Length: 328
Image (cartoon, rainbow, N blue to C red; front, side, top):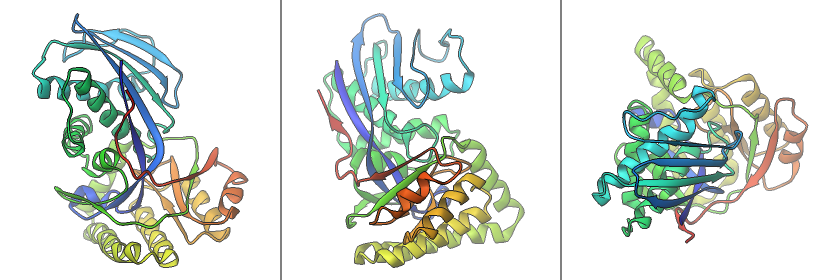
């Protein structure tokens, strides 16, 4: 079996606005999805999920457009576990030219699904790397990122950006603006994550922002203002000014809240972190539930979040300098 891992991510700035060509700065973190792949000759896919913040399960099916898993579980769970895997395997078949090959796929992850930490991107990146190597083909991280983006773009009905998949494939801090992606320098950041145990509906949240932009000109200005925050934040990140970085994160959260993508639990965690002395705090990802990210080198934010109603888990996250890793 060939195994790969890929990291999750947090957004320092720019989620939602990146969909409209504004820049964004995500950072890879050392929470990973690990995917093991073994070739099978009958063309079928067998997917076993050890942990996706869901109950573990196994499905086996024919794959492709006509194949549907025959399992008695919620549609959302099947979609979460299978949609991205199907897309990743299609990319593998395309790049290797082996159109009929099947796979046994095992997924393990310590990245909660739908929480804003890039779980789907990490699974797709690791799956593409492991499956191509299982067939004797080794891709560069940038090509893995591109093919993983194609998968997310298809599954998310054209509403994905390149930010998550590029960050997961290459690691470190990255800047994404439209089609342009590149690594940027970042200091060691004292990142603290708070997780409310939930998950937002990324497609609905992105569509909601789109509706606001179409209805209200000032909503489009709000999206543009997020881009301005990102541009300022790049210079501050390079200078290593954590206090100013935190203030800009606070601005970014306020703008996202104005676009309707925050929630009571996310706001509660953000204010708990700020009141505990964090330099700044904001939601990360699509919003609607999931995670916040705060900057705090002390233990105060972790302690405050652990006593905040609605916060189910809090942890410190280190930057992941390495993106996709080849385990076997």
